[in-house]
Length: 117
Image 1 (spheres, helix red, strand yellow):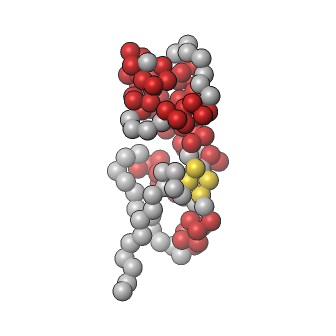
Image 2: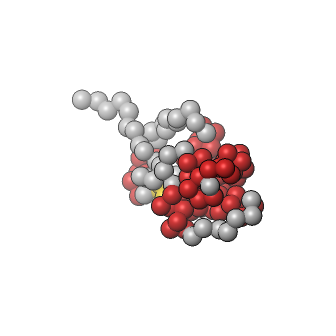
């Protein structure tokens, strides 16, 4: 049997991306005048849409505004490859010159990140 494709779940499986998530949420929360939550508090709150997470952290009435501020900050933070830590077998796959496939969300950012693997 010939293998035609290999799928990877990067989000928390092959890369550890929580540091830029925490930094992004913290920056927005601070910018809005709220006390910055701890790393553990944000980690426990993340799950589902960003608006749901912000609701848990600063209240439902401020969540939509926070998410508007969050997106550009988050995309910038996720672009810094030093936060993204690939596991060793990502390197062996990339040495075989397999062409990565991308999801339609944040495609440019995903391509930029995978170029560093």
